[in-house]
Image (cartoon, rainbow, N blue to C red):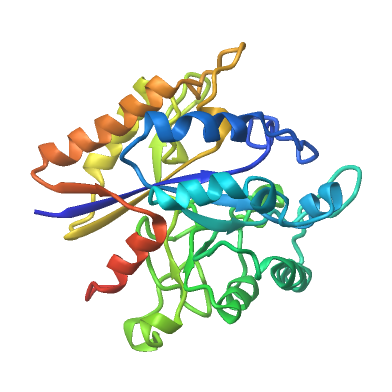
Length: 315
């Protein structure tokens, strides 16, 4: 019987950033307010991992990179008491009228170090990291290790957007946790090249699968987001079942953005915009696992990483 650890992670991005036509200028937070009001009620037994934005864009707009951490401190304390955890989630943008992604590795490292200097004395523990727009370089991952991070959750296995000029390229990345190789962080390090696990960053990727929305010409690689329509989630579960690796421990890192669970006036062909569908999709995943005769537990991301480190296999 295999054990499945399920992490429900929430990127606290502003409304309108994670859409078919993303707007990096947006700084409205209706989705986050919605999540704070309802998620603990509709997901009462699930410990959530909140990836909290803290970066230069918020610093410019609100006077502090720690704006969300400070403004909603009471909520974060309540969330942590119920078993949730927080992680650091910066988006590295130029501070122009039309923000652009910082793609130069040295510039990104300097910006991460600058922001971390400003937020590291926050009252909240931030045990894991997720880079906004899901990209990394060897240098950015290395500076995180130097800051003391031991868990990263940025990779989207097999996703490659380099043809469009975006630095997001996870071609070849496994769909499970791994210790990144120094020469190519998309790949697992050879076992004999791994330092003591407590000294190395463990990559816990956002799990990916193939689903085909009505507007897709063919099945498309997407991360596992439980806010999609029921029929699309069922498609994904079929792929998931057929491609499940032969491990005795599985970590499923699900991701959503608050606006994807919030009702909208206008419907969408990918997202259901429904708390009921979110609940039903999560229940369907549990049902699939139990039908296999396996066990499933919801945990925070750092908890899942701790369990994975105890396993004898690393690939």
